[in-house]
Image (cartoon, rainbow, N blue to C red; front, top):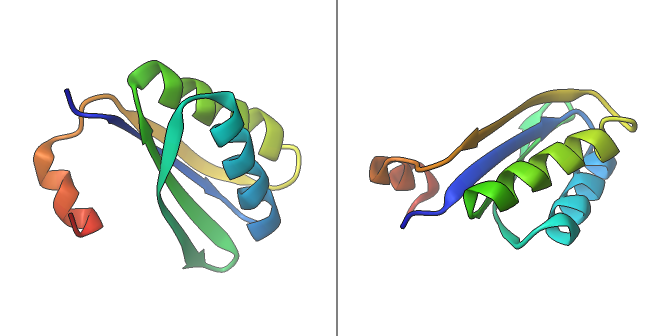
Length: 89
């Protein structure tokens, strides 16, 4: 079964690092991508089982959201295999 992917965008590198730490400590997830988008916005993509990704994203939103502006979050439970092309896989 394919792993779920979670997206987290926030406007602060320090808050993004806090969010990643929170996500990794919350559930059994791994970092798939970490990018500076521009204008201080950081995009983090994680993967794991659906419940773990949802829990990690929600906990990071709660924790890092107090530090900076959360731009967006999303969880895709069973991403289509074609999405792997976006990540160079």
